[in-house]
Image 1 (cartoon, rainbow, N blue to C red):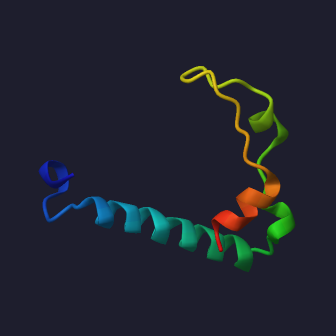
Image 2: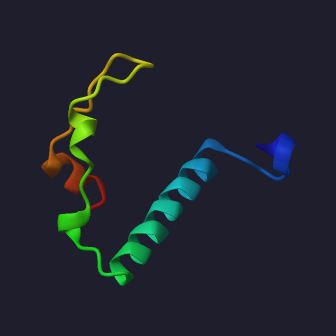
Image 3: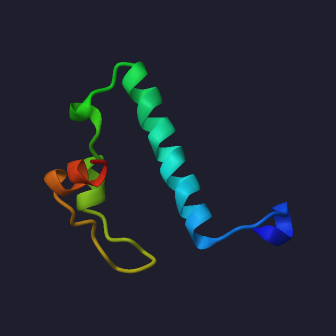
Length: 69
């Protein structure tokens, strides 16, 4: 990151940018009228096998809801 953009790029800074981005996206969605009911993944996430790892997404809706608390 520093080579491309300059500045001081630490692991913590990159993680914080990700957190801030998700918080802004969620605030935008809330302002647009989305509710927690809309905050779910499509069903295919729970059925399709990831080609890169062979894994299937297995977090419950409850675990996903806890992610943003």
